[in-house]
Length: 371
Image (cartoon, rainbow, N blue to C red; front, side):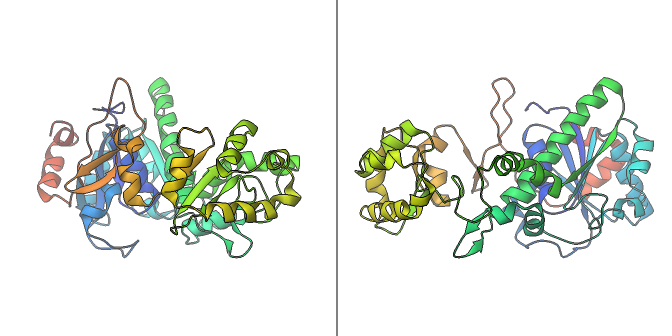
């Protein structure tokens, strides 16, 4: 089930954006097989497999790609696939004789998806790094933070998952469309640095126009504006406000009990620090639930800051079936939604299956597609 049903992908086991990209594809119905190392490479943060949720929805087999037999098994799977995902340092797959030249020789229509932090070329191509480093070098980290604390780390949502996995998925699907039209495969070089740079396009425009200042909390959507910020409530929780448009800001001010003079000074940056102090004092007078009640039904661009448990049980999420429980573990349902080809409920991560490896050697992709 799902709009990618029929798409066959080989995933060479890695961490971070590669598995997340493979999960997105598998969630939407692609048949994905993950090839895992036989020996632990000591990468990432260790946890029980059932909690490693980005490995959901696809079977796994363990191979030693330095072994000629296992390398040949991997290449046989690649020869029948539509696409491949790998996330190793540049040159690693070539040394295993599973690089683009080897794989495209076996399958000329193959889409060879490469996920790295810095890209396949350039002076940093062989340099190690993680999400925070790519975010730093892209310039994005210089725009996210506070005057008091400096840069703030937005988890790995922006680099690994946004600039990495999503751009790899987008690029691979674009290349699959091209291959189906022409029969020509190609390499997709998805660098996290490139992806984050692309995400910053709007902000390059803001800076060039003079609308953005290179200082933390000095701009309209970086926490500088009083009407686009988070505030602590009486019970120690937080609320968010994002009333950019004048009509929504008027509703926000009314709910807070502030007069129209604040509306007239909405874009007066010189008064923002003082306005934020006033806003902070007002929001500190009531609990978060009290503010929820005040702004219920108001078009003020207000929302409470929920913790993860609260978010999973919010009516906006539950009424859209946005959470699934797989073997007792709550997790987000596949996204986005489709009117014609809704994906199935995800299957849990699975350990390497030696029986599947035997069937794959005998049957190839038929062992997966018909199982």
